[in-house]
Image (cartoon, rainbow, N blue to C red; front, side, top):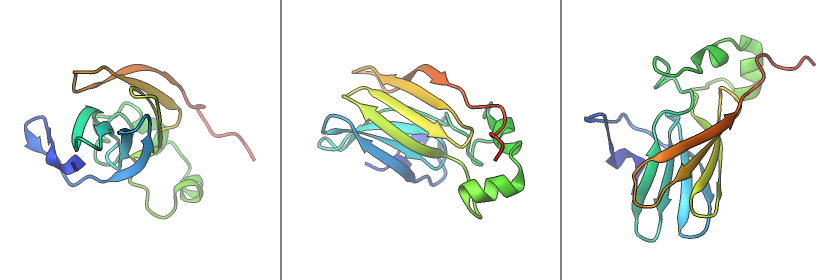
Length: 138
């Protein structure tokens, strides 16, 4: 499977790519995308099992992301040091525990936790640990 095979709200989604991946209990994996989405898949069955679309800040979903103000509020010099010359946003890291728990982090900071429920096609949002409002001095 590829993340580009799926539809978002009746339209083909713009080209997206996997930025991070983690293996839970094989054959389950989770992936974080450049567009800020999180996916759970079965690699043996070659099947996407569930997704949480646009849950992390990305330039591709900036209009709809509630965390846009956190990323836009970063000092330009700090943003360059943290993320390099180009930062389109998206998922910074993902981790999968077992077959159904996924933790993900994005440019907006903090960690979000999701649970995949067998037989559904969505990742259920469980909770989050928020980021600091402003970076620590130093």
